[in-house]
Image (cartoon, rainbow, N blue to C red; front, side, top):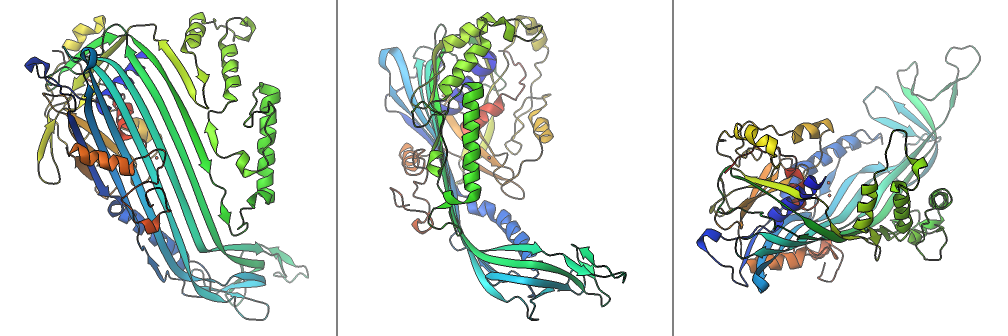
Length: 607
């Protein structure tokens, strides 16, 4: 477990705050030095095939809608649909106090989209129609719906409006302290903030309710009526089935939701600094070391779903609906059961009693964790306690060391957030890294860039040293056209197989990843490669190249605020609700890449 933790830590270090200089050349950092990467592109262009597929399915569904009319989709308008994806990174040498180089980096990823679409088609007129008879001549042909007076249910051309917006922001701030002599990391402070908000507004969308009626017909002439629920075929070849009523309502719905998540971690390397870069970088290079670490931090989440505005409760009085009241009663019963059976009290209002849920505001905003988690922690402590031997399962032994280490972790609640540490990891932690072959790419303007990908690897053990040396065949050069090819011959990537076992991933942003490549001499990011295999028919790839630090900072400030995810300067104000600045699963790419890199089983290339 400790090896996995340090490998994850090292991955984040390399992907979020990679910066160095060639120590062999005795180059020095200057306070105020900056470097940055960034790119922004239009997501709607990549989503066009996906949008057309939805409209084609909708057209087919409307064509089968038995309204007595041709039923074709009469038209649609995408109006001002727009969306962007932005990836920006900036880093700065803050100071070099006490022979420590202090570097602060920011990585921001954001998605901002706005939808304004209208669809025109033929629907039943709004109203309730009783004793409706359906007649279809042949299967697949249009059907008629006749009222008792012989007339058909009236239809009319309706335009349904679909609008909404979605905003997703991830920003990671990394501060690192490095020794000046050989550029080893002594401390890292990591702060991640994620904000997401979205809403949808539907107007004039038909909602049809059909109530089937039992029709008495004597098919076999035995003097007794038969009851049929399915379509019945008469002698004239027509099919019929009666309905008690057909109810059509043109619905309006407004839905809004938001979520925030953040965590803050501090890693201090107590004995030996972390040698995270061995410069200058070389192809297929492998290096390793060991260190001890103290960890501390906190984490929290907030979810807020605003009370929906619906046609059935336009004045936000949905709390009075029987279905909602039943939901609240169920939540209250669940809270009382926790209190009585588990000793855990959900007490949001701080009165010392289990909460009673009878309104929307009693649920949202919801903070995770909440204050009642203190009791849950006590339950965990009791479960791992060695004082109660009777609670152990047959054949189990009490792990006193686990109990002691858990107490040292000092897991607690502070201001509705998990907090822990400082905690000294009780063992020496090994780590290892290796580099791919040299890769090259071109930016949009044709400028070429080269760099190495640095990959966390499994450390070798004394028993494995000899075997590892036999496995050191030189890999062939890597190619950015194949992101899985990093020059390590003979290696099998098992991550795809594991993923396939869980089923295919859907959505245009699925399986997207961001790969960092580093300058051989300085260790600084040379460029990034963003691959979106599902965005287009043949996939989509973009090189994120170096830009001016001021440009990246402006983009981050304007479009990547986790506390206000709707804040942006890239969408038209007409499509987004007003915010302070006039205004679907991707988490932070850096962390995605870090997690994914742990799946790589690297070969041992020894120096």
